[in-house]
Length: 156
Length: 150
Image (spheres, rainbow over the protein chains, first blue to last red):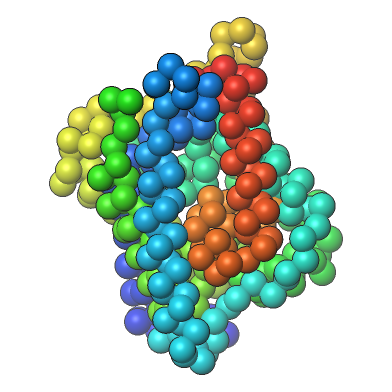
């Protein structure tokens, strides 16, 4: 079941590389820049940095086009099916999880992508954040009943 | 507004969009970082591509900073994490540990982060992702206002 074919892994590598380059070029690796976006209190004084919205906007446009292209195909290039999340229900877990993540994101300005990419620069205390994030993720899979987790995992 | 960098933001954003597009059209996978690292430990049969993705992500961040050092943190100025706001009386390592814990826990329970919900999910017009994105952005904005971390 594990797909170890070269084109498949090459696509994963290319995607990861583009992602890392994008995080650096957009400066979203910098937690302080992210926080300057989240700091809406700075809007009246003119110190607000709207860059993050431009990052998201550009990424969304490109991905939206890719999703439309994908709809014309029955399968991706290197796998037998699109692994579309099957779980569609809006529930308390979704909202509660997003809220917890929002608190963490607001405290440190680091979401999971930049957290990993910061390994390239090893700033002080990064390992503390990364280990805690990993532990939190593990704890979360305990909180979620296994059937639910499996369904989500399959959908991913 | 001197810190506002619309051009590099859009260029970097387009690269991130391209990254998610490659993984979707190539392998039919959602490039959600919390999902990718969150499934490294269980006996997942997908662990190889996840590791390849993450290693490439770190390597490309490193390489991009060497090629274009003028873009700031990680380039010609050091990347650094926040310090705990003095008023809270919490040491910085503990502050970051709490933040990391909540980030890992929240993205696992909510099944996605800024990339999985915010980019991939919104582009797929997923109602779940729209709601999640509104919630974590809203709560993060409130958290910054309450903690005074900036």
